[in-house]
Length: 356
Image 1 (spheres, rainbow, N blue to C red):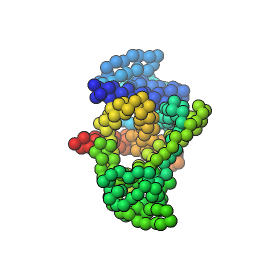
Image 2 (cartoon, rainbow, N blue to C red):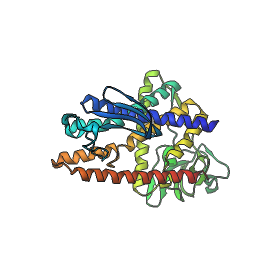
Image 3 (cartoon, rainbow, N blue to C red):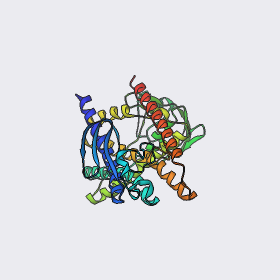
Image 4 (cartoon, one colour):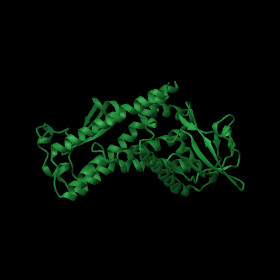
C-alpha cells in the first residue's frame, strides 16, 4: 500500500512540476505570438488529446517530461514539409522573433519552477509558524560505537576545520560538515576546539544504508524560533536560496569528479518520495519544493538540449552577429540528448545498486 501511495505521490509531483515548467514556455510563447502546435504532458504514445483554438493539448503514456512544440524550434523535431508548419507565417516562428523574446521564452520554464519552489517553501514556513536556526558545528551528542566516539570526539567539542586531501572547510554550521562528508567519505582530519585546547582527530565516516548517507556519529542541536506569518516570505526565500546554493555546490563537486555515486534518477526520487509520504504532508511538500528547484537549476545548465543551452546558443549568435548553421545546431542538440540519456541511465544504475 505504501508503495502505491508513493508511486501516486511521485507521479503527481512530477506531473505538476512538468506542467508548471511547460506552461511557462507556453504562456510566454503565446504572449509573443509564437505558434504552438502542441502542449504535451509526458512522452510517447498519446493517451488523450484535445484540440484548442490552434494548440493540441496531449497527455502521453510515459509520465516523464513534456514539451511545448513551438514553430521554428531548431531541435531537429520539425520539417518545413510538416503539414502543420507549412501555413505558419514566418513572423510566428520562434527562430524569427527577436533574440530577447526567444531568451524570455526559453527561461520562462525555469522561472515557473523557481516560483513554485518559493511558493512551497513560503507556505511551509507559514504553516509551521517557526524557523529552525542552523545548528552550529558543536557536538551535542556522540553516537555509541560510532567513528566519532572511537576517534575521541566528545560533547561540547567545536569542529573548527575539516581537511581531506586538498579539500578543506571551516564550517559555520553543522550542515557544512555533513555536506563535506558526503563528497569526501574517506578519512578526514578534524581540528577540534575543546575548552582552551585545540587538537586534531582523524575520523573515517560509515555508510548508512537506510539513509544512504555517510555519517561520523556526531550530533549537533538546533533551535526553533517562532515567526509571524509575514516573516514566512523571507524565511521561504532564505530556504530556497540555501537549497539552491547546496545544489550548485553539488554541481561543483561533480565537475571536480566527486559525488557521482550520489546521483539519483527517477528510481531514487520514487524511493525518496515513498519515504517522505510516510512522514506526512509537510515532508512531502518539502521534497516537492526541492525537486522543483532542482529541475529549474538543472535546466539552466549550458547543455544544448536544455533551456540554458538554448539560451547560450542564442547569446553566441547575438555576440558573433552570425547565425549558426541549423544542421549544426540540430546535431549538437541531438548529441546533448544522448549525453542526458547516458546520465539518466547512470543515475538509474546508482539507484538500483543502492537498493541492494
